[in-house]
Amino acid sequence: MQTPKNIKYNFNDSFGFLIVKAGRLVENRLKLNFENEGIEITPQQWSVLTHLWNNDGVSQQELANVFSKDKTSMARLLNNLEKNNFIVRKQGKKDKRNKNIFLTEKSKSLKDISIKIAEETLLEILDGIDTEKVKTSKLVLKQICNNISLFG
Image (cartoon, rainbow, N blue to C red; front, top):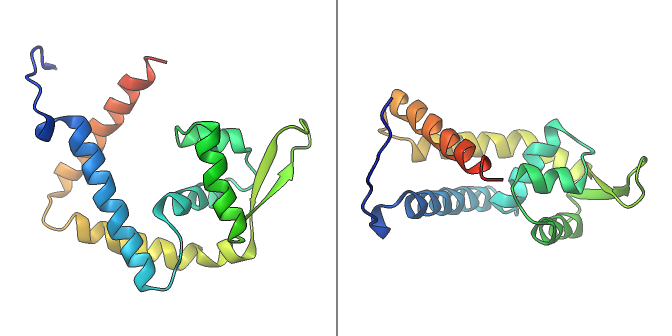
């Protein structure tokens, strides 16, 4: 396998710019599709719920780690979810300083419809892109994340 040895930086063609731009466009489309179905939740909030649907009761710190967010950013995101009755925080059993995050009935009721909307959104944004290119793109992004995680 050959990796690039010499890269000329071009902002509009850089990985960072393209990753951030694609991510924002995907989030904007998903938010619009949620709104069109009457679901008032942001894509970031939805991402937290998707993790909780499979891991209800995890700690606030674990969520921050999973989403690579600092404590303050995760707390703000969870505050909004709690304010809108999507989650509840409960004191940790082992460590009273920790808060564990639990789904409410309101957020549980969004699971099927919101996943359906997300799947439809993926079909929209991947339209015309060969399946093998999608797989390769995911592998490249995972390798970039892995490379970055090695820096600590």
